[in-house]
Length: 406
Ligand SMILES: Cc1cc2nc3c(=O)[nH]c(=O)nc-3n(C[C@H](O)[C@H](O)[C@H](O)COP(=O)(O)OP(=O)(O)OC[C@H]3O[C@@H](n4cnc5c(N)ncnc54)[C@H](O)[C@@H]3O)c2cc1C
View 1 (cartoon, rainbow, N blue to C red):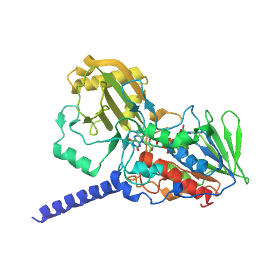
View 2: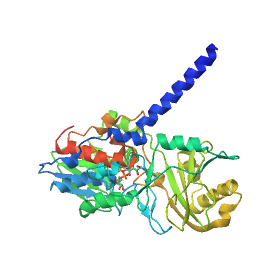
View 3: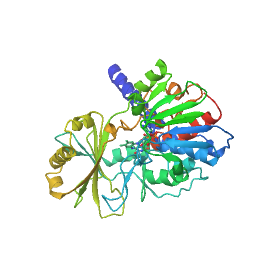
View 4: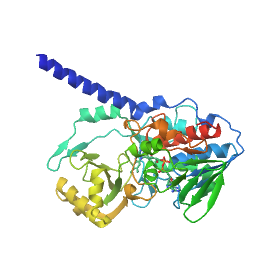
């Protein structure tokens, strides 16, 4: 009896722990969204600002500078803006988010992010409340009960854009206002803040000068030391950067002539994190696209195959095992593979900002002598996760930068 009570207590504790983590995550993040952001303020600043990186956070920060007529430039390494937001419009008859895809938050967060008052949003969203989910452990294909599906949605309510994408949201509400200030193919290699001004050097030999610099590259890029800071970052800052988990991963989208799969098949317990999911979930479409997300160890295993064709063929083999050969039979030969983990200017997928206890957000956020600042999903002090976190961090950090705060 005594042992039974202890066991029940342990179960209760584990359950409470899980629940409290859930509350901190996802939709519960909305409760931490600040009432006021840089969008609600005005700034008088007559120096020049350089933003390194045109991802969500860089674009959000730029929006504040643009609205306040402050002199700025965005240096972007690639030939496009969006960073880990990207869309494809050719594989299906609907746009596909091949980077960030879900809104791990309440729908109203979209209004807060773009500065629209009220809770009625402009975008049409689909609640990601699954109707069919299965798990696969290499041998058994097992249905997830309706009760568990409902439980997951109630604690992790997530949404997807019905007709558009995360990329469209950021394009329309952020990039459209600031894209004329982006200098593409400008790979920043050095940020020198020795003097009064900051000098930013690029791979093609250009030197740009500004009063303040906002660095928004991913934590993976910072970890790689491909940007040199002069003077060097402190040991404390380097430790904080290296402690953040930023797993490799990739997304694969396969087109089929017929749908033979459920909404989701979860393989989490076999090969690291792998999930197969119906990209066309609740879309009005004729296209059958199955998405596959590989994270961490599972992605590394596939990297060893070193060619896209081999990866696709291996994934089809696994799908054939689960679905009795249907995958190869119905595959149209069309796919997209986006390898975020090995992309030179991303070097990983996302940061689990709400759950990763190793993130020292305070040290990560410290500026370098009030001249060089850092923004992005990992610096978000309001724990919004993913795209909302990156955008909000852009607002929060540009506010500190313009107010000359640490
Ligand atoms: C596969 C995948 C799935 C995801 N799913 C979701 C999801 O469902 N929901 C969600 O909310 N979030 C998701 N995320 C996370 C989300 O995409 C990110 O949190 C967000 O886009 C990060 O924005 P950022 O501005 O902080 O960084 P980034 O988007 O990485 O932007 C940094 C920019 O800096 C540029 N850059 C890098 N190095 C240099 C250099 N040396 N010089 C100049 N420029 C440089 C890059 O090219 C890039 O444009 C996902 C991410 C991935 C990869």
